[in-house]
Image (cartoon, rainbow, N blue to C red):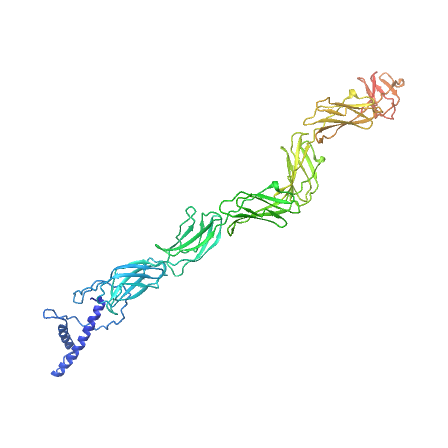
Length: 625
């Protein structure tokens, strides 16, 4: 057996102290017997050398003359948990004691979250006991790890050290002791990690159609570096999942199938060690239906939707309606006809809601909602002739019953709605303008809009106003009882021309077809020279042109002239006449070349006797109005 250098020195000190005390006692005795006291130093040196020689040397060994170390002996108890050297230490004289063998073939026989069981080999000779020291390895993060030690009886070759930190990496050393104050002889170090504890409180925090958010409570006072999440059944590459951040307490498992039931487990990892699994069954959210309005089944008291089958797992679809409506049907099983309606609402154009929920097990999809208005009432249109022209058509209407947001106005090709939207309570009139052909048939459409739903189309086809004819007096056909006009074909579209006369006249013809002879007359008037009106209207479909009117006097009677000899001289001629029958405005007098009429105009009721100077020819006629 051997001792460490420290304790070797302490043992020598004990011996020297004893020898010194003995030498002092002997010196005092010798001095008493001889009567001559020796000096303390001589006595101490001589006796110590003699005693030492007798105690520690033979005849061939030199005497150790090293001064006595009188330092007080260190009586501190031996720390049996300190790793100790396993080789023999030299003595003060330089010789080597035979080694005390350390335990060998240390093995890790078993371990769990807080214990490590160790086995070893040792001859047990002179062994008082063993200590298993578990020291936290420097690779452990933070300060969570706690060292452990266990004393084992000297007859044992295995033992378990407990109260360790779960998941921590330990350096394991077995130390053999010969006595309570012996520092012992330590084995080689082995490393072993305890198993981490499992998480608690694993729960589903939230879910989506392709993910489940989970959370957990990590083990307390553990050492770990990551988690492993196991998903069953596996979808794609979702399992296992390594979460390398040890500080997280939640995770979103993605890539899942909508509506599917999964078993999700969380394992705590510390190095290569794994905790027990913490597992829960969780279901992802089923996909929501994507609703489309089924307009063909929407009316003034009902709304309706259709949808396509959703991907993923599901059991059925549940249908519900806003207040006042009844779902038809309320439950649609997987594989059924994917259509439903809410009926029984009382107000046309009212906003209503239908809701469809996909159900898988106990988990519902998000609500698939569609707000739809029952069909609003359609407007009843009337032609607004006052706002129709060659490039525009126009309508008016009255407010419809029920609920609505606005009226949408649209036009046939080439036209622009003005306005395109008429709000509820606004002026209920609109026009389509910008057409290029006068008299062309165009359509204006007004739709009552309430939320998502339109009324049936309120349409009216109207012709833009056709161009009016430009009338010319047809003097060749004007006489004392008739007036007459002619005109050229107008541009644009038309069906015919309608001719009318002022009172007392008869139109001839009343209708002039497109492509016919563009002339007409009004005849049968009783008063020569009377002012009469002929009107021609271009007609195209529903629209008439503005009136093409011309007022023409029937031909007045001519004056009957007589020579006024009394007023004729060498440079003048003169006439007189009597008032003619019928209507007239005035008489216009003109002269042959070189003469000047005096007066040039004779008003009705004036002196009917003008002088004409400078010519022997005269002409008196009545002007047409």
